[in-house]
Length: 149
Image (tube, rainbow, N blue to C red; front, side, top):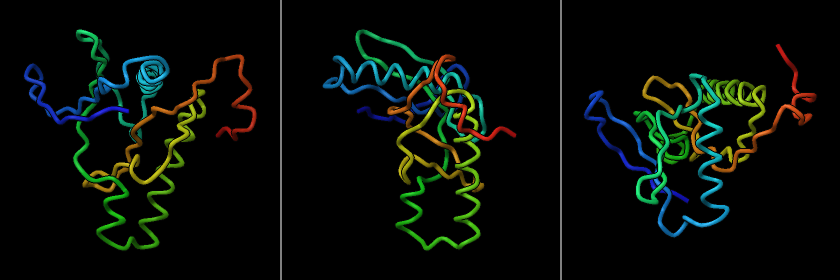
């Protein structure tokens, strides 16, 4: 749906990731999905979810800016090495915690897969790509099945 670029924010002197909707996806539901992803991510403030810094439309090109996560996707790690049981359990627990947080706020990711799970160099999980996320309003009964702590 989009392309992600590594860039440098010259004002704040930091690396950022810029996700831009590709020109072939500027119409209809693709544009709506991209905007929905930005809104969904903007509602979340959790260390296990990649946040959004900015969202804009520049001359018809939609993009949003996120922090650059130094590390690898879980997919890349799986291809390079065999994970130990402890590491698998730790990653799974971190993913579950981030998903629980988003579910409590009425947002369901709907596209959890190894390529959307980023692992930092410190072994922390960061969920990315909420392009298929479903946002439930206050009137929806999503949270009735969620165990609250």
